[in-house]
Length: 486
Image (tube, rainbow, N blue to C red; front, side, top):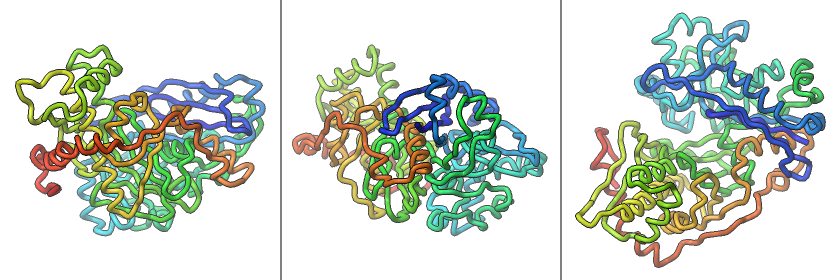
């Protein structure tokens, strides 16, 4: 059996798989986020460790005794700063912390080659700008930094006494030469850091150490190997079988993510595409990230008095596709791909006297679908071919919305059973590959297909005019000095 542990933002999830790939045990423990100032988002690293112990120990003892390996997944980008005794110097600065806008601009100026090396634009979510902020605003803390670790890798340190990371998570720091799969001395130097302050790098399927005797005893299992694992997105992809070139998924959670596995490094940073190493050896992946997806559904349900998401989907379906001229731009929390605009906000356009709750609801479904289509377009600009997308996340519950998305994006959507287990499942599979070896394509199989939705030609035609209008609308609402001329 194999244990996967996912260090998330809202909680830690532990999952045990048997040798057939079936989930035989699960445990969850909640986490909270601290926001002491506007734009700040932090967590106490000690809370990750408490939650990890609670989640693992919630699994049946007889199952834990049979575990043969552990894999880790975790929230990306978080800056965990340790002193010479490996004690955290301050709360970890998380992926959704927005304080380092100025530092992003400074890093781009200081390293003109940054986008080529890192494969990404400098954004406040990444780890490197956070360290520049600490250097500027907390110099006493910065001077004491002996090691910088990502959240799951701090948990690994307490599990194994080893300072190690996998390449998929490390690619999100802005310190990695993503094509070379190695730390970049140029990018580290720009932040006043060196390789000595970084963990050792491993592929996701490599073993990074073993559980210490103390942890093994506390968890009621042998001193088993611990695999490098992966970032939450990469591990989530492993969990649903997105491991070969061209495999792709669409995650419809609070945010929307299109994730494509690639056998080559294919960056498109100028259009805010994320290009990272995959958790699979010798593989990379691209992501388009949309900060608001299912969150838009919750928002419009609230403001229109819908009883919930299901009621809203029913209202939208009753109104029908392109039922009115209304356009919705789904930038409630800003946007990453393709605009990289943290300041832009959502908007309704082209309202008239006949605009009602049903037509507004339909416009929101269409607006999110059009934004996802924008993201797919810039992935294709980087040479990626996507013919179908495996769909996971809470937004996958509505078949009607799936019809709208398939038509807007022009690709088949494949809905999977059990995709909600998430990154912990992928982490367990990476542990299995680390311990037993084998063909990743055979170990990391996709869950059974629940149903498929192909683009409906009539719906594609019905949405065409509104999609074109949507692509012209962003420059009219942004405050950025330079905009996309779409």
